[in-house]
Length: 96
Length: 96
DNA sequence: AAAATATATGAATACATGTTCATGTATTGA
DNA sequence: TCAATACATGAACATGTATTCATATATTTT
Image (cartoon, rainbow over all chains, first blue to last red; front, side):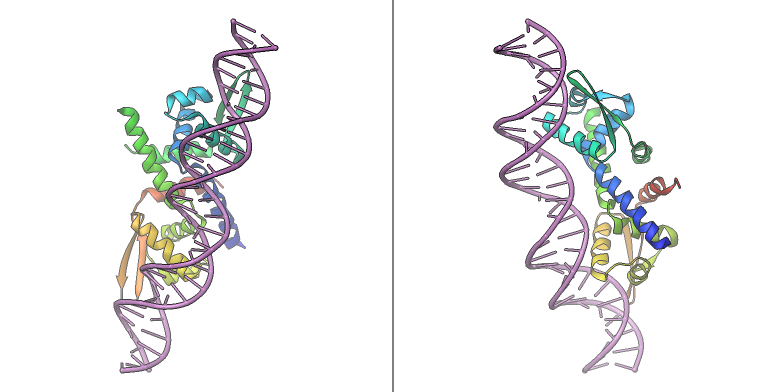
């Protein structure tokens, strides 16, 4: 029973890690950790990333509950929804 | 230049995350975070994992510098080499 | 209404990953 | 020396992921 609980916790943790284990996605999260909200175009400029690729990653991370999206006119402003990824980011980049 | 540096940091971080973003691998790391060293058989029993699958994961993580392996007679004792994964684990499982 | 802008979507492809099965190898004990 | 134990390896397969390209949609501007 307790075994099963941890197994599920591992599944959830693995799910989160997989959702984030990518150079571009880490870049997105890093950007959003600095500014709270950014449009796709802003993200495109900050990172060096093609529109379509960026959009795919954003859509996926949104579907997985990691990001939020707020539409406003022609723009889409993304922000971090799952705050745990911020801790992860901090953990990954704290030393040096 | 500074851009490039962070890009490489993201690549490295993504590499580490990918190497760990799996239920079985997280389980292995959790076990080894509790006991310092465990043989493959011990790990097999603690987790519920087939020998061959476990061995593949162990071999891979060793190849990626995450685990250490010490042979002693018929046994192979694995331990954690990359201490950063311990921080990650802690970060993932600290709350609740 | 037409053109431009911002973003999303879907198909296609290439590549990586997880898993199983069968088999190999090294070490120990009978 | 033979069998048993502990572990690794490789092939095969299915599935997942990243990327690119072409195109669609919605909004704004002209």
